[in-house]
Image (cartoon, rainbow, N blue to C red; front, top):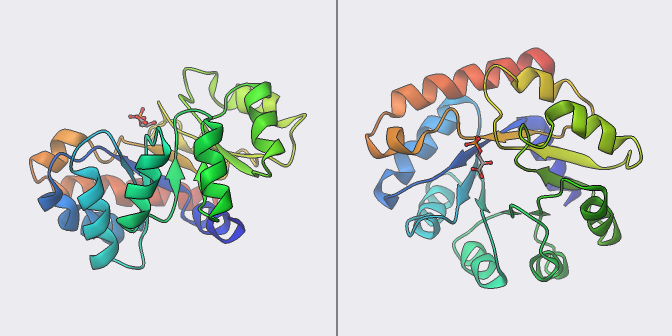
Length: 212
Ligand code: 3PG
């Protein structure tokens, strides 16, 4: 988990992806890597998620590809069998978290309240997803939560975009940000990979202005 956290902090931005057809996975991975964000959270919201993870990890082994919107242990198993390297959940589910920790699978459960963060701390987690970030109060809320839990790192996701990315990344308790603004579902479907690559380059540049 420590190694994963260091890598995620270095990359700084996790593209959150909803992909409808696995045949687009390779071109998408190429755009992300070429754009400077060799990382992806492939959400388990579509049938194509599992196969897309498999294709991306096979074609681009240097990429850190994880599964998002994971709701149960069965999905964790499917994601890991496909080659996922981390698991992201919208909320905190102790079965999913325990399963991952027992197997040393990096897991980011969604935590937005003091009680949820304390559950995460009790499990030994040092990093959680903060979702949906803007709706739950953005940087101001993360700052308030980080005061008592000053060893916890957050990955705000949900409402993050190129306008507020630097504000989030400037705050020390933010490990990285997740978001879909540079990888819209319909652009993937339409094969607009140049557009995606340009927005990924822009996101990587914004991140680089805050962190080298
Ligand atoms: C999600 O799970 O939908 C992600 O948090 C992405 O949110 P966004 O579309 O607001 O970036």
